[in-house]
Amino acid sequence: MITSIVFALVGLGVLFSVVRLLKGPSAADRVVALDTFNIIIIGTIVLLAHFYNNNLYLDIAIVYAILAFLETIVFARYLEGHYGNH
Image (cartoon, rainbow, N blue to C red; front, top):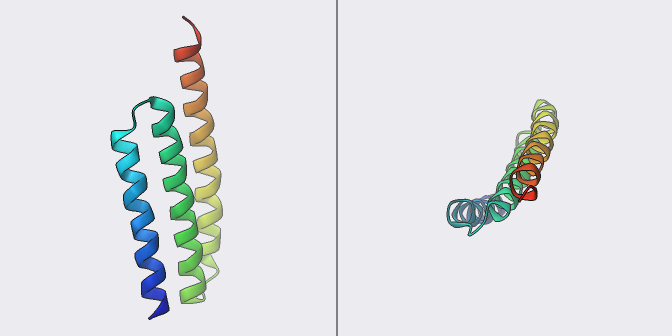
C-alpha cells in the first residue's frame, strides 16, 4: 500500500519534470528539469533496490548518477559557450 503511494508520487514528480523539460522557457530551465528528472530516476532505482532487496540496483544507480552528472556538465559547458559569446 505505502509503496504504491510512494511510486505514484515519484511518477507525479517525473511528470512535472518532463512538462518543465518540454515547456521550459529557456535552455537553462530545460537543463535544470533534465537534472531533476535524473535525480528522481536515481531515487527510483534506489527505491527499487530497497523494495527488491537487490544490491545490483545500487550499482546501476551509481553509474547512472555519474553519467547524469557528466551530462549536466556537458550541457552547462554548451550553454556557457553558446550564450556567453555575444
